[in-house]
Length: 389
Image (cartoon, rainbow, N blue to C red; front, side, top):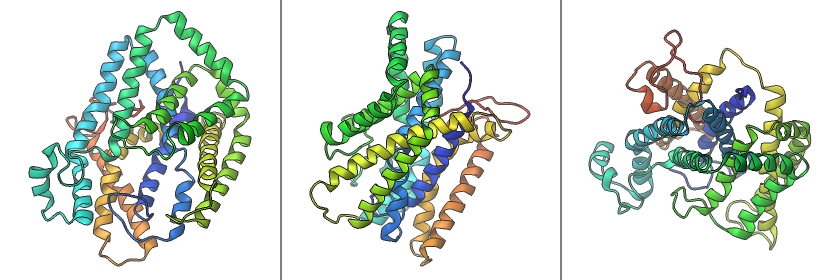
């Protein structure tokens, strides 16, 4: 099973977009750990990626997990390696990286009176919610926890399912998704999740009871896992990527129009909420279909920068939100124009991410803590295999 460079580039691009998205969260009225004033229209560019960015990441992760599983000598070794690569950074992140986010949120929203050192030593590891939020917390690192759970679930399923049944399931996937059903079935499922199964439901990222997230992201992970051995399905995505992109853009235009007409908590006429949800689902799936098809047809080639960027993705992901929240907190009283705040946040976050990665990758004891393998190339210090698969 060969490496798909196009999906490597798609993963890199998706995580780069995630940094911009979380910077944008500082300026929109949606709940976030730190807030700065922003224009009412700031939600519109966020809607360009909001419906699909996380599902795409789980699809790409499922695909990469299938490739990595195939290369391992045993399923137990695969599960052990994935646990080390995901749980160690998750625990380190919850203990060291995430606490500044929680402290800033408590200070700015709940008037927490103590400094960060006191908070970290006395209040962060309470294992309760008496300060108004559950502590300790994983905040943005929920993705890592869910990815680990889904990875172990699929590994266990592969281990206990007879080979004949697995092959039959793979053939069924290819038969079902090689035709127009490929463009319709995932969309129908997204609409069912949002309008029928969990109407008005919200993701909690708390694992237990987070049915909206699991009903959305675990099927996406399974789709990517099956896609890794479904060349005919991938060929269909390539064939239809232009149509998919057109539909995604048109759906986003409808989403943006509704958002601008009834911004924020403005009450819309009956039926508009349902139309908005359906339009988001259409945008979400067709954007994913277009991006995968485009990546396979245009980006499936290597480049000298790819190994480093592939390795850097996980450290960037671990640190980026803490940088955004802390820098945003510093900017609260600076009185700068919104555009200046935005540019400072982007530039400082990107610079901080690069510093975190470039320093951390050269320290053997730090490498496993930030999602890197303990050993890499002695010449380049780079391990081109994806950590956050």
